[in-house]
Length: 74
Image (tube, rainbow, N blue to C red):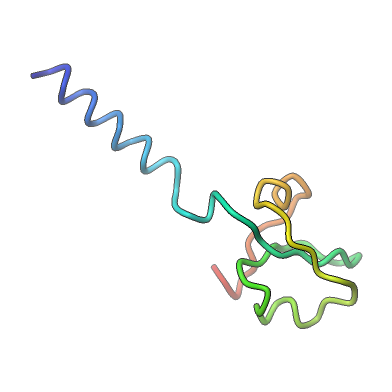
């Protein structure tokens, strides 16, 4: 019984650590010189000021570029 309970606790912890669906999938970024954020939707208000083309990338790529989640979608 103890081993089963420990396995359940560890499994639940891994679910919490993994976050949610925002750890997977594509996001949108602007490649302008002042750009620092990524956006969950192409229609995000934060992208309206983009001075260049927007690009669809994986969330991992956006984070590797130093981008953080847009404040409008936080």
